[in-house]
Structures are given as C-alpha cells and as structure tokens.
Amino acid sequence: MKTGFGILCAVAFALVLSSVPARAAEGGKLLIAAAASLRYSYDDKLIPMFKEQNPGVEIEATYDSSGKLQAQIENGLEADIFMSAAPKQMNALKDGGFIDADTIVDLLENRIVLIRPASKESPINGFYEVVNADMIAVGDPASVPAGQYAREVFTSLGIWDAVLAKASLGTNVTEVLNWVAEGSADVGVVYATDAATTDRVAVIAAAPAGSLKAPVLYPVAMLAKSASPELAKKFLAFLQTPEAIAVFEEYGFAAYKK
Image (tube, rainbow, N blue to C red; front, side, top):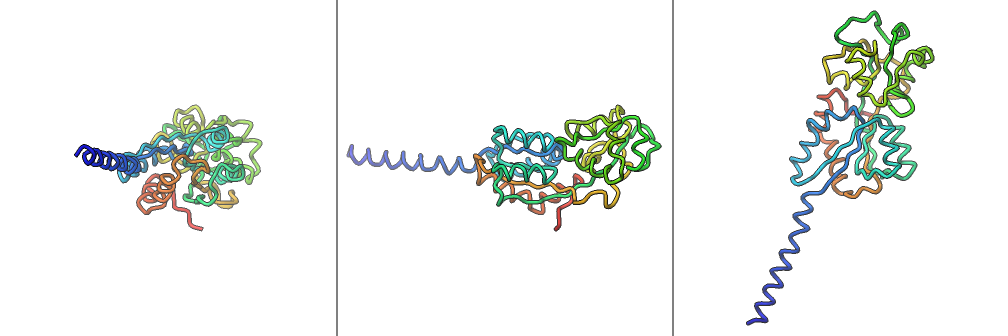
C-alpha cells in the first residue's frame, strides 16, 4: 500500500508541475521602445487593449526620439519591440543586427505640420514665412525624426540655414510641442498627431506638397534578441488588426498603404 500511495503522490506532483508552465505561458513581459509621438495611442488605448486580450501579460513602454531609442538599443536596452517615427533608425538597427529583419512592418503614416500657440494669433501663414518668426522650435535633426523631416521641408524651400539661425532644437517632438504650447516659441514643426493631442496649439499649415521625398513612415519590428519572441510577434500581429489601426486613426495616424 505504501508503495502504491507513493506512486500516486508522485503522479499527482508531476501533474501539478506540468501545469505550471501552461499557466505561466498565459503571462509574460514585453518592453516596448516607441517614438514619443506614439505615447498617447499606446498608453491610452493599445496597451490596455492588448493586456485585456492577454491576461497576465506585463508591458513596460519607454518613449523618446527614435534616434535616442536607437542609441539605447545599440547600447544594450533589452527591448522586445521597436517602433520608430522614421525608417532611418529602423534600418540602422537592422543593418547592425539588432532587429529581426523578417518582422519589419511599415505600419503607419503621419503628416508634418507647422503650429503656433493657440493663445495668440500669428502673422505667419505657412512654412515659407517661418523665417519671419523670432523663435522657431524644431526637433534636433541629429536624433529626432520630426526634426529631420523639418530640415528636409525647409531645405526644399531653400530656407533651412535661415531657420536654423532662429531655431531652438528639441530633444524630441514632445518637447517642441510643449515649447509652442507654452508660448516660448512662436512656431514649431511637429507631427499632425502631436498637434491633435492638445488644444493649446493651433495648426497653421501642413508641409507643402512635394517638400518631402517620401511619406512620413512609422515602421515597427521585433528585436533580434527579444526575451519574449512569441509574445513580441503576437503584439506585432495585434498592431496590424483593424481594431488597433482604428485606434491609431483616432489619434491622427493613417494606415500605410503601399
């Protein structure tokens, strides 16, 4: 009897142990590194939606300029997902072996707009007239995609040097938005999605047609050394669902169509 009882206990214990990984698989943890302009759509809607669909999942998100996030990943940031506000940073990480190239998706489009403080009118009516401002807020082109797009627009108009002479360079697009909202800058260049997050700024104009060589793309991918590859791929698939795209559109983005 003792031997039989021991066998039954061993079998029961084995069954308990075998059930633990199955329960743990329902959870997991993701670290997302995303462009600052994605903070609201991610924090307000997308991350809660994904967690609701996947009970037990923990998600930590860090937001900054795509250039800074690129540098952090190159220096060891253990992220699972990277979503950039421009292909440049994604391509650099892919070429460096940091990104699983097979998972890259050009997901969204944005627009570049010129803004002013909502609290006061401006004599500036478009990108051509920006040089008449006393202070111009622009993302630093060295690391901020919105700044790189701004430089491209102003270069196409032949006024980049004049703009740079009056520019205050922000470390990310959110900083540029805040400077204009506070009135410390007369005008600024941000994404349309950023301008839509606050009533403290007003849009003067969108970037002139033809001033950008390519669409303002937001690619997303899984990192090559993701600690949770299956969960990361599940999140990537989620971002491409109609429900997720509808959230992005609610925040001013558009689904990228080749």
